[in-house]
Length: 478
Image (tube, rainbow, N blue to C red; front, top):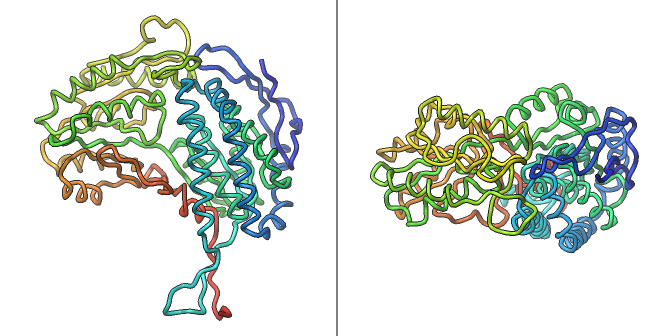
């Protein structure tokens, strides 16, 4: 079992102030694979102090110098991609191929996008032609606390660390204590890139401990958090007394509106998207809304896809889904599947219990419910497992009403060959992102939502601005 009981503070790996050990569990085997330490107040204070001491010099570095560090991080990250993928498979169960191509690859994608956006970023820009000597200056905020989840670890780490330090901030990262190994490897990458000491720091811990300590710390000027809506509310309350900026990227219950004129692959594509990463994505299209005339065929297709979706350990190559991350998560999903059955949804694939041929590990059967109403628990709660709910609709207006009838608002989806309808729905659906006909959002598009999904905007230019304050200046000499 690997000993990972160190924190990265002020440019060095250091021992924790006290020993509060926690085992990291491989969700495919239920075996302990590493031991970490959970930080306490002294560790958090030390990391924040290092970041605070480094901020004055780092915030004044020329942008070109900060860009050079980002490019070094990118090069080293690419070189160590196989190590990163292995760490992600170990800690949260992502299958080998997916861990390398997607879980690790998305980090490359985000770093490259931030480098592109940063090269064109104007830190001081005119307000407009009507006021040529009035300027808007984008300034770093200070010490920022970054709290990241276990489901897409490098997606969130790169979406936070890179824009934070490119903007001139210094940072303290608290990764998920369930999946910390990839973030500790990322700290090695930052160190190898030669980023000055104190600019980036990492302290392992849980939400009640280090998470709360960062959220309430008077020297932390901003918290950027990705995770559950419940935790986001708690962080917002904890941060209120110090009036720090809080950026939240939270849960989702995405609606996928499939019309009768959708392309032939729409249902299969949407079902596979729901099951991807074992359903552990906040932007997963977990509610499939299908026009009545296409409904029966859609249910049949979704059930077939679920039956065809292989479930196996992440420690082997192949096109399959792995386990969910923990016993706690597995138990929650099982309870929600049973709730769907109890409330009268029609189970057409999957169900409770382990998949056939599996006797250990946190594996979930790919599950499809039909004849769901939007009042059922499986349509209201974020399940965070490979569970799809299918709901029929008769009119476009009804589809919009069902889709918007949720506390969440992260990503919604539309499948239709009617361009006018797509444009109309894109404006009517209440979400931060609308993806249509299987086409991904463009590179550098901001990721974020509305309502209980939080209102952060991560990625590209918006992601850089998220980690800065704007300053208004008059009488600028031109």
